[in-house]
Length: 636
Image (tube, rainbow, N blue to C red):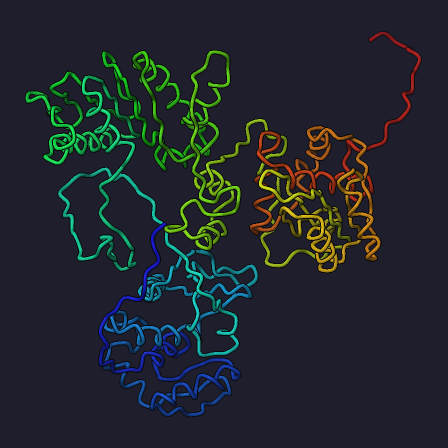
């Protein structure tokens, strides 16, 4: 995550067309005239805004259009007549001028959701890029999404949509009132890619204590970093402390690993280093970047994953990011990619470790089959290596951020909302999930792509309850489901809502009551177990018709999951494209090996109740019949 930035402070420009007026024309204006088309209710606000900027507006043939006197001549003067684009002067005007331009664009072609997320859509990719640059120059994170422009079933080609959070970007009250007004900030994120080319680069240093600056049309916040603790400072310290020892450094590419070697070598050869370790120096005849030695007999050797370490020994083996991001993406479809790295580790570097030596693996988690996952699994066997595992999740079990000074909780939660649950769990929480051994696969869920759920004939709400709030307590989980019939007369079930949280009993009672009142389900289901009984009593006293559920499959969670697995395999269980649904799908896919199963318990309880009630039946649900025996009448 990159730090949030303030608007870029360009100087105020003498602009021919008022920025707001230009924004309105770019959004809803005719390409070949100064006529604006918009809804009459919006025109009531937009026309006065234009006239306040010393323009005169005129009525046109319809109530949805109005003209701006003199605008056409100005458009021709700027070369915009018949060519909708944002001139460079406007993109590099003062923050106030740029915000006025954005207001004109958003008043006409912008939108804002009920949750305050803003959107700007267009079919011109080049124009979308300009608007995104404008938004980012104001210190706002903006993402571009590609989609297909459709009306009904007819396609009109590609369309692009910018999504972002901001306020004070509309003059229309009906839009501005829905934007988020708090000080919540949304950081931006970058990924690092290895290029297949090499060449000269130019490092720069700016006059700021933190060395940060903005780069490119996207106004990316960046800096020059020179400190990698595990692969830079640690080996330099180790060879200073133990100058006769041997270090092997590895990373996912030889080039990256050699780069670390060069930096460590230069540090050991520096005057600063000699002030601390005055007797340790580089051996004069052995100074290549990836392979060098000290005057005390110490050695440093760097290789990429897959490289040979034959004839080398290691007192300290450092493995820094053995998997590249590209490999991790490929592994989603070819998981044996992770296996090849583990095989290289066990057949090569692991065997080069000297008696009493140490191994350090520093990496982002990708999967249970990544290198960390496999060495941990191997350590659980008799005689396996003993590892000390240090996990640094972005959000701690207490709910607090690991590094609040750099990653505030609100920014982490914003990121969590944007990422798929599987990526968030693995890369940020260091808790990857896997489908190996999963009873219900992710792909078995049918995805409901429409904005609104189908009209349901029956709604069921299912609770799995727990009453303690400490960090290690179980969650209380609630899932809400609807039954609907498709055009072919087949009964289907869709997940309508889901959440889990830790509650004390008074909080749980209140939340259960609020959730019941929100959905008004036909059945409100709580399992008949000791933890649920007090809640059943209290909710019935409050007038809620609670149904207690006693599963015929007993209390074995795996048995209960197996009992509903074929409902998923039949393709009749649906989930919307919503964050709450992703969390349920991910937890179900991780079962039975996952860390939590509260949503799983709520889900199986609901689907078993549907099955028992005859809402959804399969051929396998036919009642067992008494066997009928026939006398044998012929040889077979």
